[in-house]
Image: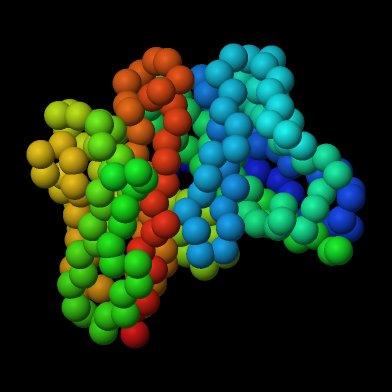
Length: 110
Length: 118
């Protein structure tokens, strides 16, 4: 299926720093989802966005559904070592099909 | 069950052999998905089941791959004549389904079946 363009592919940051990653597409999506995958585990849903312009927070995580419905970003504030993992964006169009981005691998240096 | 259950969690098979991977979705979830994840890579869509509708098989990489879902619940992904490039984590996910509302949009993943073809 069509891939979303997710960037950056990887980040290596210092503990306490803020992190920002985003996904873009040439297609319009009705829903944007952000998942985190720990090593050896399946992806776990972090934040779901359902309306263009929507800004949603979950603890230190904040995500926004772009106005054009073709992009979304995820911010993590004051990163901690347990934030390490792979973050995936996913977009849903009509018909219930999810398309995933390529993932952002986050590494946090204590 | 409480979550999506997949088995086996790990499988090592010889090239050319057939393998079957099983997925037990969350009870009551009508939508079921299979994804493949190669080492360090993103999620590659394979196949999608929604209720009694014909499955969307558009992501299956070759005719060696097939999947079925019996009774609208358990699904089996079959890979025939496995090749080394089939080595990956095969992830199953399920959701309540439907085309609107928040319930249909939240999908839950299993922990995956790690396949190694030697």
